[in-house]
Length: 257
Image (cartoon, rainbow, N blue to C red):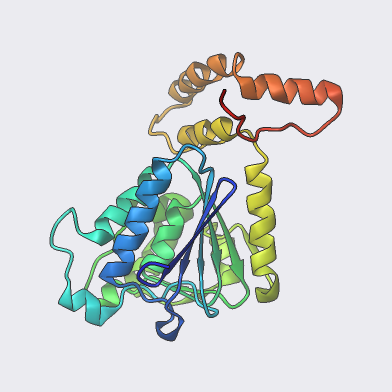
């Protein structure tokens, strides 16, 4: 554990667990630094396929610790909070979040960068930036309107009112809502499915989905540039071989000679 962040690594997975339950996992500067460093290390490790975010003690993340935030305001682009947010936005690994209890401020906006989000029934989301005299961060002023539409984004960001897991699913912020007791096993099952997929194909598919090409024609051309080399990839050959052999494909890393 580093600065109230539990870091677990196993078989292509890095789990980053917010571990400050007595404060509902409110983030401090030290916690942001630990998260940023862990994300940077994961980005440098080609064996990391999935990063899972979770929280201890029935909470996901209650946003910033305001006392710490006031004592250590992020005054530069190198501030730990901005390093973490950039790492989120630039991550090539698949990002999964398992959310229970409060997810406030950055606890919600970081989900906009996750590829898959599962919520327990107790999850409560809020974007109270205006209520604190602040403005949105983590590119949420761009990503939230894209996800939910301008009117619903305005309601969430301008009023800052809390909303529950079912509302988050209806908005598209959450992909699945499960009983709190089932959250961990559901997230683990999802991670297991992702880890069984072809790792480079996962990364490339994510890159295409996150791409900035604006038109259908441009995106088709970009897909073609990525698709053609895949036909000669070891992952494609293994998938086809497994299909004809009627067995699950094996995309685990092969030992180097």
